[in-house]
Structures are given as structure tokens and as C-alpha cells.
Image (tube, rainbow, N blue to C red; front, side, top):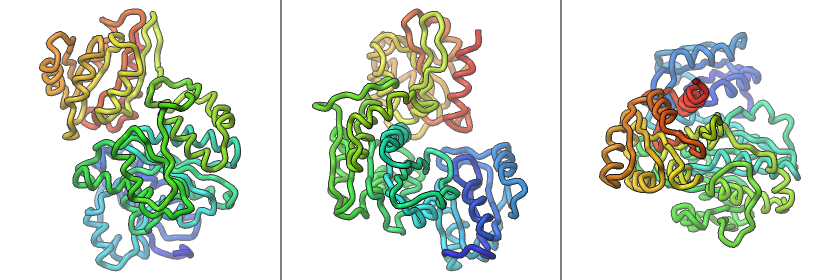
Length: 440
């Protein structure tokens, strides 16, 4: 659809994470008759509350559109000319299926953008590391190109399309949900970057194999003129080479000069190497790349220093919602100096390796949330000497950390689990941790 004027378009999935605000504004600006729909509840771990919807509706205040919030009516989907769904909405959602049965075209905000983007597109995906890699890559590319950054990292790029041209570069962080919804388009970016792949979002995708397969869409439809940037350290990522026609470029740490970074952790050095491998495909030199990231201090909730007092450093790594991320964060600091907070919603993942590594390397492990007791028991079975305190919630965990932290210690919120048993999302959890850390 090229002409939206007068078309009946239903947007399903208004909220902070769905991109509903940006696409609704863009469609209304093109003369569409927009109906915005949403329901409260959990989609892909992003819990939409009535308060969130109120804030989102206020962001659309004054625009010519209608709203139906809290309940869904099938005719809004079967009588539309186009349905735009949030990527967090599962493909099995009954309203999406009803629209498809009625012959209504279905799309997403990211697809609307990709179909119209004149610039070179670099896509970044992975289980963890994709946001930081996207940000680093954007700053590297800015040394040579006018660069736009969007996708899952936040912020709609639809409104910026008139400013873009073929000489520009666009960096898109692409989630597994986005890539699954993009599958019918048979599209992959000009340059695809894949960070570490582990198991996640298994319920949404229906299992690990389906999750990994969705990630492969970032390279699956590339041509021989494209580039696939794959890790030589992560076996699942490395295996994507057999699913692409693109030129494959491997990245890693061994044998490569390190970048000077202001963000801690070997995993962040790996993110920088991935970003450079992609930037280099587009002509960015190593010197230009280093200049671009010299001042990068990291993204919120990703190894973010939120407080320092009496020689104790408080680190917010709330984004660490899988075990592998919690391990990488813990190993970024000296052994025996980390007081780590773990636990939250049970995502039915394997936490045995995380418990083993944390028991071996941490000064203490503080457990919270729904899975806290299970993690505490596993930690004690792993190592009877490990100091484990079952705290129940974050406030008690912070209080316990303050009572035992000494000069040179790091209090690390890197839970290895999702947040939505006690928080709406990982951001709310990280913000709460930062506030508590600063309190006397």
C-alpha cells in the first residue's frame, strides 16, 4: 500500500515497546483513518498496564484517530484495509488470524520503514549485546556517513524518511519478534550483524529451534553483494554462515587489537569488535571507529554505574535477563569482589551454569523474585561455601548488599532472569535499583 489517504487502518499493540505511537502518528499524517487498539497484559515479557496506555494515548493527543483500549472487537480487524501489529504480538493472536482470514493485509512498523528506506541498512540481532553493538556501530558509521539508528533500540524512523537518501546509513536493532514478522517479506539487510545467540523467548516462539530460526531471517535472504558479520566464539551464531549467500566476515577478540572502551567487560569488547567488522565493510577504518566510540559510556541498564560510595560501586545491568548475560557481567569484575543480585520471573531456562560460575566467583549472591528460592537451593548444592541470602525482593537485597559491601566491592544487579514477576519491565527494575542504591 502506497497511498494511505482515507484508508481504514487498525494498529494493534499500543505501548512503550510496540512502536505503536510512532506508526500511528505517521499513518495519521498520511491521511489514514487510524484506529488504535490495545489490551493490558503480558506480551513477550513486556507487561502493558493501564498507566502505560494512558501515557501512550496522551502522546497521541490531538491527532485525528480513534481508540479502543482494554477490549478488542473483531470487526475492527476484519473490516480494515490494513492491520499494523506490534512485533510483540504473537502470530497466533486471534485478531491477527481473523484479519488474515478476512483477506486484510498485515504489516509492522519496521516493515513499513524498510519498504520505503532508500539508505543502506545494517541490521543487528542477537540474544544479548545487540543494543550496545547497535549504538557502537552507529557512532562508528557517523565518522563516514549521515547515520540513523532505530528499530528495537527505540524511536520510530518513519517520520525521518523524507530526510534520508541512498548515501546514508541506517542501523536497525532487530528483535526475534521483528524478524519473525518480517519473514513473509523475504528481506535481509545489506549488512547483518549477529551477536551471541542463546535460548530466550521460548514460549513466544514455541521452542529454542524456532527462536534460532527466527534469528536466521537476518541473513537468510541476503545476496552475494551483502555482508554477514558472525561471531567466531558463539557456535550458534557461527552456524548462520550456512544460511546466507552473503560474504561472511568473522569477528572475535583473539588476535585482534582491542578497542579503548569506557564500558567494562569482555563481552563489550566483543560487541565493539562486531560493530567494527560491520563498519569496516562500509569503508570505516579502525582509527575512525575508535574515534567514534571514544566517548561512549554505555546504554542505560547495561553495566551502568549508578552509584559510588565508600569505595563500593553499584552496577545496574538489569538488561541481563538470560543466564549467559549474568555470567558475562559477573566475570567483568575481580573474583571475590562481586555481590550479585539474581532472580525474578521463571523463564524455564537452564540456570545450572550461571549458578556454578556465580558460586565460584562472587563474594555473595542475593536471590529475589519468583525463582529466588530455586536459585538459592541450586547455588548451595553447587558450592556449600558460597554465601547465599534469600531476600525475596529487590529492596531487601539492596539492604543486605549495603550491610556486607566493603571498599573495592561491586554490587551488581544482573539477575539472569526476566523482571515481570515484580516489575513491569527490566527498565523499571533497573531504575528502582539505582534509586535504592543512592538511599542512605
